[in-house]
Amino acid sequence: MATNEERYDITVFGATGLTGSHIVEHVIELSASQPEMYSQRFRWAIAGRNNEQMQQLVQKYMNKYPGATIPEPAILVANVMRRDTTDAMAKQSKVIINAVGPFRFMGEYVVRSCVENGCDYVDVTGEPEFVERMQRTYHEQARKNNTTIVHCCGFDSVPADIGSLFVKELYQKKGWSPVHIEMFLRVYCGESGIHGGYATYESAVHGVGSAEVLREIRKMSGLAKLPRPGPPLKLKRGVSYNHNMQMYTIPFPGSDSSVVRLSQQLIVSGQAQPSTIGSSTKQKIMPPTIQFAAYMLLPTFWIMVQMVFYGLIFSFLATTPWGRNLLLNHPERFSKGVFSKKNPTDEQLRQTSFEVTLMSKGYQSKTIPPDNHEPDCHVKAVVRGPELGYIATPRIVLQCALALLHGKRNGQVPVGVLTPSAAFWNTNLLERLPTVGITLEEVL
Image: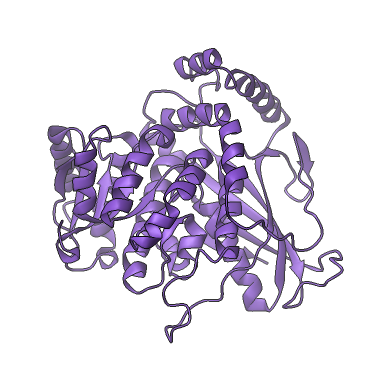
C-alpha cells in the first residue's frame, strides 16, 4: 500500500461516463481559471475500465484548456466487478470521487474498497436506499479505519443540505433558533428544453421500486430519533398552491428530505464530531435540528397537470418488475422527453439553471420556548447555480472532495459514513461553493 504522501490527492472514478467526464473537465478547467484552488504538489488520477478512452479524454481536455496548471492525471484501470482493481485504486488514492452508477448496484464495491484500504470518498448519488444501507453497513468500520465516506455530494443533495446548514448559521449569527425550513426548487430552461440524464432516470425507477427496502433499513437503524422543535411542520401532500412563491408545488421526489434528515440524525447521535472537538482549534457551533420539507415549483397550471399525469404513470409502473422494464426501455415516452439516453446538447446545458429557495421560521431567542408557540421570526435564503447534473454537480463534488482533502488533514472532518452537512459543517465548504458559481445568499 502506498504511503499517504505517495497517494494521489484525488481520483475521479468513472471518468469516461457522462457525469465523470464532466468532472474531469472541471478539474482541468478550474486549474486554468483558479489555479489557487490546488496546492503546488497536487497529484491526481482518473480511473475507469478503458485505458485508451481515458487517454483520449485527458488529451481532449488538456488541449481545450492550455492554461491548465496541474499535471496530467495518472490513469488507473478499475472495474467494480473486479475487487482487486478497486482495492488497488483505493490504496493509491487519498480521496475518490465516485461517478459510477446506479449506485444501488455499483456503489458498494467502491465504498467497501475505500473503507478497507483507508481511502476517503465522495460521490454524486441521489439514492436514499443506497446511502442508508451504506451508513448502516460500513459506518463503524469506517470509524475504526479513520475513513470518511460522504454520499450525495452533487446537486443531490448539497443545495438542500448545505443550504439548510447556511440558514442555520444565519440564525446562530442573529442569536435566534430555527425550527422549520421549507425548500422550493425551481429549474429554468431555454428554448432548447431541459435534459435529464438516463442514469438519473434509472436511479429514480429503481428507487421507487425499492421503497419498501428503505423502510426496512430505517426500522433497523440505530440512530437517534430526531426531536421535533417548535410546532409541527405541516407537510403538503400532492398538488398545492404556495401563495408566498406564487406557484403550484408538489413534494420534491428527490433525495433531499432523506439526506437532511439523516444529516441531523448523525449530528444528534454524536456521529458528526471531528477530532478537533474539545481541542484548542477554532471550530464552529454544531448546527441545531429543524423540521424540513422539500417541494418542486411548477410555474404554470399546464406544467402542473403534465407533472401529475406523468408522475402518476411513473409511480404506478415503477412498483412492478414489468413496469420498471417498460420505463427503462422508453425513458422519453414516460417523461415527455425530459429523460433520454442521448447526451444533452451544449445549448441545453448553457440555458439551464436552478434556484433553491429556503423559507424558514424560528424564534427570536437562543432557546426554543417550552410551549412550542407559533414562530415569531423568519429567514429566507436562496441557492443558485447552473445546469444541475453536468455543470453544477461537477463543481459541487470537486469542492466537497477538496474540503474533505484539506479538512481531514486539519482534523475538521469526522470519520464514518456521512452526508454533506454532517461531514462538512466544520469546514469552509460554504465559502468554497460561491467561488465556482454555486451562490448562497440571505434575502432580506
